Image (tube, rainbow, N blue to C red; front, top):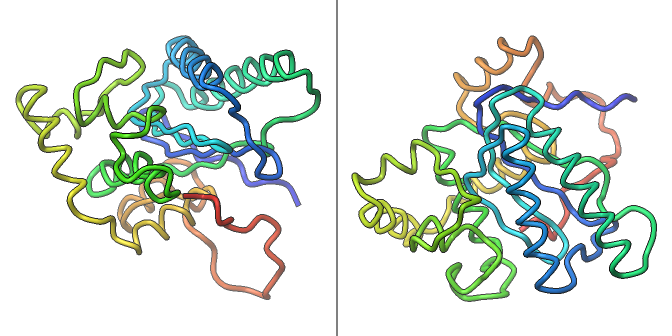
Length: 237
């Protein structure tokens, strides 16, 4: 069965995850993380993509990104993935694939979902029990979004900018969002949408995406049960 074409729309934020092949590590040293972020910045500029949030975990990556063209995110991940794999294979004297095939993604509604998605991304190290607070993790966008740490990679979304009239006010308001836990139903919905290549949002948003692309943006009706070929795995924090 052919794979479903990815849902992509210009300027609509996309949450994506790319994992290491067979859940294996894709970062092995601090320099690996630094170079990945350097190249993420380089190729995001070249492909017209805006990075709103990110986290680099040991064996997978989360990004929240908007593109100025429909194929911008795909071009970004292709160029970045190839560059990084070449570096890893050369540095660690390995060969073969590093990533688990194509990245997974979902288009994300702005109102009511985008800032929650940012929190979900930046809380990954906490859910993985690597740190007690997201500020303690070096390889995410939390310090940039919540504490004003300089990060030229980040391009804040208008909803983030609307949190306050100046950087200090915005950062304080953003930190306040982390006082409450994320709704477990929202987390489940985000994971299902990302793994299934669907739209994440309310019914009006998903209908708009379906009309714009001319195909469904939500799971189809239940049919004969079949074995899930690509399940939601435990390390999707």
